[in-house]
Structures are given as structure tokens and as C-alpha cells.
Figure 1: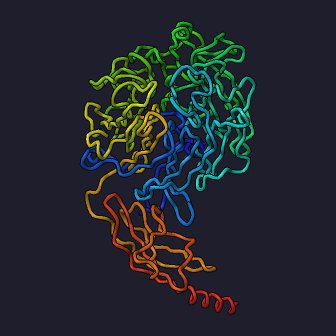
Figure 2: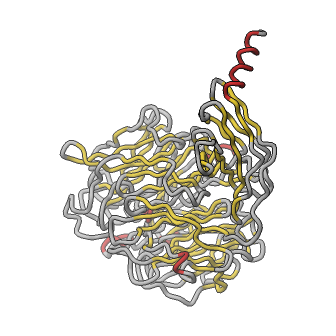
Figure 3: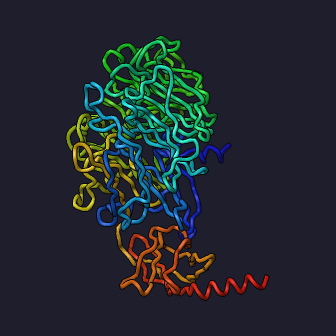
Length: 612
């Protein structure tokens, strides 16, 4: 059971060929099924090296439109003839991109697929600019590492109308897998009006898809649907307002949370409530089959609904090692609940409810510090960054720490944590640098704070803006931290129609790695495979050809994370190859070359075959 839960969470430790380094995957929004937003296996980035001299932007990948989803990361993916670390990015133009996660010279993606013309804000009288352009792919995908599948929802124009489809993509090629895509359908489901805003969830072999609205434009309902991860057959549908309306599952893009028993937690927004089948402004605990097991609704839910103070702006976060589930909404009140007994209607059933912010809450992260104990981080709308402690089943009602700055508007900071267990914690906060991002794209900034002492800012992306500025803030997309790098979504350089992913990491400050040793070539059926010894301190490898037809070495492969490459078609009769090792300090000198005489190899293989 523990293995299954780790596999379906977001941080998975693997062993690749880079000098035996354990690698971390980020397969789901906010890192794990509890939605803590923490990568606890970060051993490269520390308080000592995340600073403006040693850390900064190392490359960016430009995409075709705005990026709303959190970038996802898979290590050691077999792509063509070698293994790569890959980062996946989606856009509102219905595109999915796979970029090499390490290779600055790889300006083009490994693959890019597009699902057709998306809907946009002019396709209905939505009445606002919450999403101010196209509306193709909004929710963060989810990845099944074991099957090598990325699941994503695309909203597409089709036959004079609109359709939403669930795609299951091969993470190595971008091709649709068997049975993919399938059309999303349910009673009272309108594919244009329903906004697939929360990130997708993969749990126990089922992909769960949540729905909200665009600008509260009716008709819409809150939906959560389950689809079998292999067959893509629909397994369950929950409508949170079946005899009423609204009650969206918005959650500012956060995925549903899941406990160790497979129970699913979501929070709903404005709409119909009767405490029987319609559940606006509520925490819901659901079975894997989407049966309602328990619920909690605040005493003032009618007021919340009347004033558009959705309870679900943060989603639900489970605190590891406890029975706590917590979250809050636009009112700025934090609710701390016992997940075993949510209590139904009334604040008296909450373990705690108290004012933690001035306005909307959109992103909690949790980390257990070796020195400070359990900590809960929040940077709300028009508010300061605040850190609360946890003791037993209580959250400190006065912040243990806070920053002096007050952000200027919607939606506040989107947060992530990197740490090496309980040490070297870094709080990463992506936020608008100026103004309000509610109805327009605004310049963004990424901050790195000492998670044990947030008064200590380690670095931010505008200290050296010429090098590190990622341009416009991606509203509600947390940064992704994996294996010494930070991946940040961006709305690009314009108000609409542009997007990018910026990659930050350590800058050169020492010697490049040694040249690879032991390069060998093997020829089989006219195809060459190369192998070599792993180099200590290397991050990737580059394979080059020295064929005489070229004036300079020809690069055959970059970004390889294992000491091997195959599928090489040789040049005429004789080919010469070298390999280099690469890390943040640069590229090594080439290895000793290996020469392949294809005619001689073919003759040897024929003679060998005649002796058997």
C-alpha cells in the first residue's frame, strides 16, 4: 500500500545513470496527494547557493500561448535513442509541450502536440476577463509514471460547437495512447460553460476531472468525474448541485486531495445548498466511487454565497501524520477540520476557524522543519506572506513569521517548498510584481525565502532582471522544483497570446566535469549503439559525430541522463564518435574517439553467423 501511494503521488525517487544520483519526479499539481506543495528530496539547492551570484535563469522554452498549469517533471524518460529528464507544459491554445529539463541548447521541444482550435472568452457573454484570451487547456495535467502516460483535458471547437476531450498521451512521443481521446459527457454538462480549472487527479487507477465555471456564468454545476486510466471509460460522476445550480469545484487550480484510504477531498464555491444533494460552500469527503461520505458547511454559508465569497479558493490540504484537513476561501477565514468527522453544518464542528488574511486565500504549502516544527505558509490576496505553526490538531492563530510587504491585488502568491527532509527549506513564491492580475496579465516575480526564517530573502528574479526576469505572472501556477532546478510558468511578454516556461538553476562557478571514459561502440544490423562510463558530477551527456563530411563535430544528441545512446545511422563506411559530459559549470573536453568501420563490422557479423 505504501508503494502504491508513493507511485500515485508526485515525488518519486528513481535511480538514473548520472553518477548514481537519485532523481525526483513531479507528476501532479503541488507534488503529492495531500497537496502540501513540498519536494523533500532537494539536495542541490540550498540556503548557501540560492543567491544572485550563484543562481539564476539558465534557459527558457517559448510556447504558443498562456500557461495556466503547473509544469510537471519526469526523470529518465526513454526518448528515441537515449534517456532524458523531461518537463511538460500546457497552453490555453490546446498545446502540450515536452522540453528537455536540463539542456539549455535545446531551444525546440522534444515534442509538441496541438488538439485544435480552442474556445475563447468571446464564445459566450461571460462578462469578465478572469481568463483573458483562449480557454483550451486550463487545468494542470497528471502523469502516470508506471504506464508512461500524461492525462490532459482540452476544450476544442468541433462541428459548429464545442467539445471537451480527455487525452492520454505517451510521455515519450506525445501520441495518443490506445482508447484516447474520449469525450467528456454527463447529464447537465455543457462543455463551453464548464471550466476544467482544478488540476487532474490520478488515484487508484482512476483519473478524476473537476469543473468550475467561467466568470460564474450560468448554466454550470460543480462536477467531479472519474475515468478509468487504462480504458478511459467513465466510472463515476458527482454533480454538487444536481437539483440546483453552481457549487463549482474551482480551488484556484488545486487538484483534489486524497487520504491513505483513497478518500477524496474537494471544496465547493457559491451556489445551491440544501444539505441533502446540493452542497455549495462546503468541504466534501468522497469515496473513490464519488459517493458522498461526509461534509462540512460553515454557519454563514448563505452570506458567503450572497457576497461571492467562495469557500473553495484554496482547495483542501491534508496535513501528513495528522487527521487534519484545512482550507479557506475569499473571506480570509481558515477552517481546520478533522477529516474523520467533518461535522456537517455549523462552525462549531470545525476544530478551528479564524481570520488569517484580509481577503482571498489561494495557495497553502506545508513543511515540517527540523528546527521550527510543522509550518503552514500562506500569501493571500492584498496581504503579507504569513507562516503559522501547528501543535497537535491546532494551528497557531497568530503568525510565527510574516513579511512586511503587502501585495497589491489578486491572487496573491502561489507557493512551493523545496527541502532536504527537514533541512535547507526554501519557500518559492511566484506573484505579480505590480498591480492586480485578476483581469489582465501583469509583470511577475519569483521569490526564494529561507523557509525557517522568511524575513531572509535568498534571491528574487528581479535582482538581476536582465538575466532572470520571466515576464508576465502565470496566475495560480505554483513553481516546480526538481533536481536542482526551478521551472516557472509564465504568460510571456504580452497581455494575451504569449507564454513561456523559465528554468532556473545554479550558474557556472567551477570546473566542468571530466571527459567520459571507456567509450565503446556496438554495431547490430547496421545500427550503432554507444556506451561509456558514468562521470562523477555530470548532469547530462552529449554525443557528437566527427565524420569527415563535416567541417565541425555534428551533435547527434544532447541532454542524455544515462551513459548510452543507440539508433545511430553511420556515415558511409567509417564513422567517428565522441561524448562530452555537462553540468552547471559547462561541458567537458571530448572523450577519446571511437571509430566504427561499418563494412568491417558487417563482415565480422556475417562470418560470426556462418560459424553457428
